[in-house]
Image (cartoon, rainbow, N blue to C red; front, side):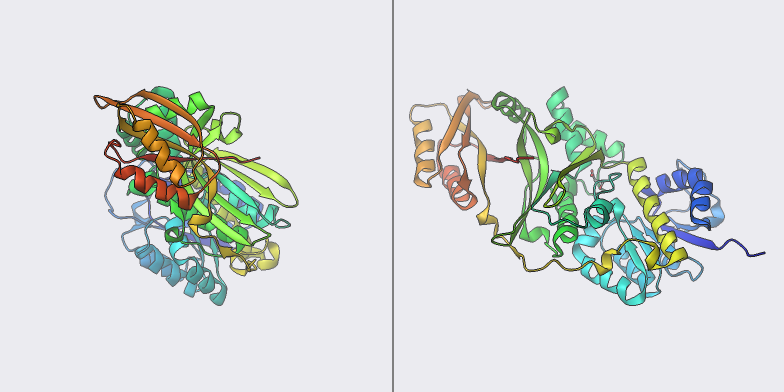
Length: 440
Ligand code: HSE
C-alpha cells in the first residue's frame, strides 16, 4: 500500500499574520489535505522570542529562533516568509529558493526592492515564489491579474491598497476622529506596518502598486520613480470641503498605460473621488481595486486589505498552490510568475506628464487682495480655477481657501505651489490633492 506523501512547511515569523496562518491552517488542514492528496505538516516555526504569550497554542518543540535554519531545513519544502523588511527576509528567501524550495511571502517591500533577483533565483533553481498576500490582503488580485485576466492588456488599474490608511480616512470622515488616535487603533487591530510611516506616507501602497504594475506590464517601477504622497496632511476640513464639492477622499494607487504613446504612469496620492464612484464608498480596512482590461472591460475587487484573517487567507492559498505544484509539477498549475512574459516596450512617464484636476487648500491671511494674489500666481502658470470656497481657518485672522482647477499639467501645478508658498499672505504649506476622473 502506498503511503500518502508529506509536505512540510516552515513558518519564518510568528507575529499577527503567522499566528493567523497557524490558526486557520490547523482548522482547515484535513480538508486541504483531502483536496491535494498529501499530508501537510506545519513543521517548524521561527519566532523572535521562545517564551511569549501568543493567541494560538503551539508545541514548544516546533519553535526555534533561527529563521535561516527553518528556511534551509532539508525536510521543509515550503517556506513562508512572514518576517517583513528587506534584510533577513531577503537572505532567507534567497537561501530557500537556491535550495529549490518554494517560498510564500506577504512581503511587498521585499518584492518591490528585490523582485527581479527573487524571481530569477526561483526560476534558476526550479522552485517557486508565491506572493498573493503581498497586495490587498485577502483579495486574490494576484491570481486575477496573472490567471483570470491573462487575455488582457491593462490601460487602467486603480484603487485602495492600504487598509490602515483607508481605516484612518474613514474614521476621520465618519466619526470626526483625530488622526493620531485612529492610527493607534489601526495598530492595535494589527493593520499597520511595524513602521507606520510606510502606511501613512504612502510607501506601502507604492510597494503594492509596483507589484501590480509588474504583473500587468512586466516592468519594475520603484517608488523613487513614482509620485508618492500620503495622508498625513489631510484634516477633517478636507472631508467637509470635498463633500461640498461632491467627492470623498481616498488614498489611491493609479497605474495607467497609454498604449498609443506606450507610456506607463504609476503614482500614489490622496484622491478626490466622486461620491457615486463605488471605490469612494469602500470604507474601513477594506481595499478595492478597479482593473480595466482591453478584452474584459472593467472588473472590480473589494475585500479586507489588512489584518490577521484576511492575510492568512491569502498565505494559505499560496501554501496550497505551492503544495499542488510539488505534487503535480508545473503542468498542474497556471503559468508561474517567474515565467511571466515581459510585456515590454512601455517606458515610464515622467511625473511631470500627469494631467488632472486639482484641489488646493491654502491657509491665508484674511485681508483684501489676497485672493487676487493667489489667482494671479495661478494665472501666471496657466492654471485655470474651476471653483473657490472660503471658510474661517483655525488660525486667528486667517482664512482657509479651497480652490479646484480645470485639467492642468503637474509641472505647472508644482511651479504654482512653489510660488504660492513664497507669498507672505500664505501662512502654511499648501495642501494639494488630485481629483480622480476615472470613467469606470
Ligand atoms: N499595513 C498594511 C495595510 C498591511 O494597512 O494595508 C497589509 O499589507
